[in-house]
Image 1 (cartoon, rainbow, N blue to C red):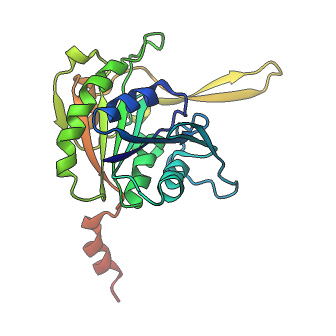
Image 2: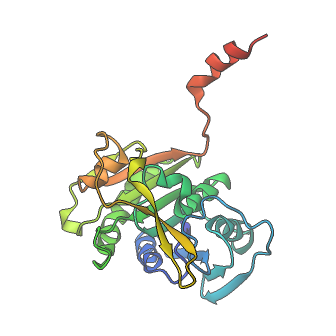
Image 3: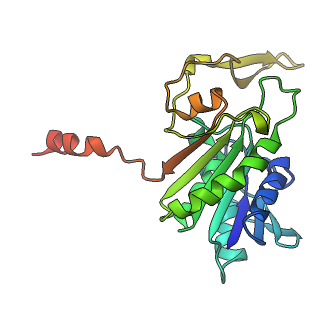
Length: 254
């Protein structure tokens, strides 16, 4: 099985090394095409106004001056053009990608682009502790991901569904199980703009969330992560709200 790896944290991110070790348990045919620099929050963006520059930095390892989406396109349509991958793995992201995060995440976008190109794809993200000085518990993803991916692959009959796996902020032995979840919704009242002033008295802002846990419903990715369970959420590129089709058609019928 040929596996293409990417991420949004950049080619030198520790989570990519974790992903390589996860992929190595599944195959020895592994290729890495990742952004030159951190592209967190890039979503499914393309570099349309700048050329894509591909740099080979090692055996089967390439860095792209571009977004995660660019990287997957370069991997499938350039680096592996004559022998495309069977699987795209994107991550392991530093920080969870759940609820509304999925619309912003470059990690999710890398997996989505794999799906667009007809390749089964999985996104992986590792939650971390509220205390930013605490180390990211990478071993949780490293130890649990191979078994989960092995069980998921036979169920992934089509590339239309992307699997979004999130590992909770705890040590591997403290994980309380695996749960198939639906996408949750964040409490947007916890979002705020942190206003500061630079040395010339000009204001600037940081986007931030209050470090307070909300109370998400059972069955959501948010609740699973809060409760120390690994969340597996099937996501689709088709964002059509199908239940609205007939009512809207009736309302707009001449």
